Image (cartoon, rainbow, N blue to C red; front, top):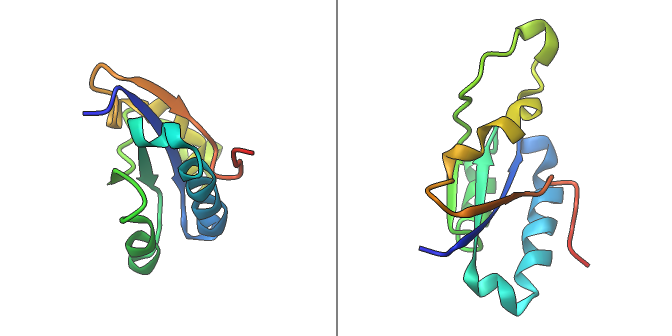
Length: 103
């Protein structure tokens, strides 16, 4: 198991940005020692099949908190920073929004 984990989340609408983020991480040799894990908040099967060879894990986002629907209004990604335990397991986790990329 890799000691460090980079976690990101996206739904189908943000797939292109997430895919670009993953590619930007993989450019660095340090990525070989870092797990890349994706929380699926509504990706299509085709999108997951594109990501699967590039990342260590893709898991359905498992929200461990209750947030009223009137605050979320269908924007499940708002809960994402609170759900890092999906991949935690005594490792250092770094959450990067899918809209970012490493330069």
